[in-house]
Amino acid sequence: MNISKILKLLIRKPLHLLGVDLVRYEPPKAVASPSEIPELDKLTWLSSCNINTILDIGAHTGEFSRTIRKLLPDPSIIAFEPLEYPYQQLVNSMGRASNFKAFKFALGDCNMTKADMHRNGFTPSSSLLKMADLHKQAFPYTAQESSETVEVRRLDDVMADMPLIDNILIKIDVQGYEDKVIRGGEKLMARAKVLIIEASFHKLYEEQPLFDEIYDSLRQKGFRYIGNLTQLHHPGDGTVLQADLILTR
Image 1 (cartoon, rainbow, N blue to C red):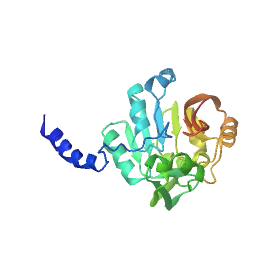
Image 2: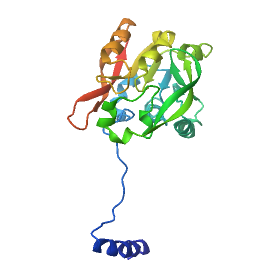
Image 3: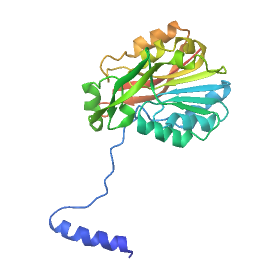
Image 4: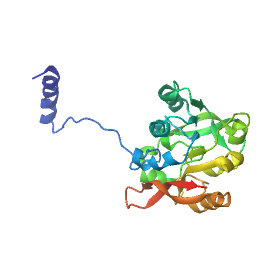
C-alpha cells in the first residue's frame, strides 16, 4: 500500500467514527453550457464552405477557436474576449499561431472606453447585461458575480482597416448582447457566408432579445436558418432555453 493510501485511511478512520466520510470534491458542471463546444463531427460540413476568415466573438478561453482550428487549419481567426483571465488563457492557447489575432474588448453597437461587465463565477455566463432570475434558478452555480471594467467597440470600426478574405464565418456567443453586436457590425454581417449565433427562447438576461427578434433581423439581412448546433436545456424540466443557431446565405 502506498503512502497516499495509508494517509487517507488514517484520516478517514476517525472521521468514520463521527459518521463523516471523506470524498473528492467535484465542481459543478454545466449541462449543455452556453459555452460548450460541439463535437468536431457536427462541424465537418464547414469543410465544403471554402471559409477563409473566422471571427470568434465571445471567445472565452478559445474553446471554439481551438475546435474550428482542428477542422479548418488554414483560415485566419480573429477572436474577441473582454475579460482579463479568459483572454490570457485564450492568448496562451492560441497566440502562437501566425494566422490568429485576439482583441481584449467586448463588441456592441457603440464605442465605450469603460463599461461594467457582470463577471460571473462561472465565466462563460458573464455578460454586459444583468442576469435574470431564471438563469440563476436553473443554474445555481452562476449566482455569484462581480464587476469588471471592459472596453466596448463596434465591430465595423475595428475591422474598417483590416483586410479580410471572403468567405467569412462569424460565431457570436455574447450572453444576450447579440442584437447590439449585429447593429455594430452591419457591414461585416453583409459579408458573412456562415453565421453561428446564440439565441434564447426565454430571458436569461435582462433586456436581452429572444429568438424571434434575432431571427427576424438576420432573415432581413439575407440569412437562412438551417438548424441548431447545440441546445441548452433547463436541468429541471428539460425546457429548451437557448440554442446555437446556424444560418447561411
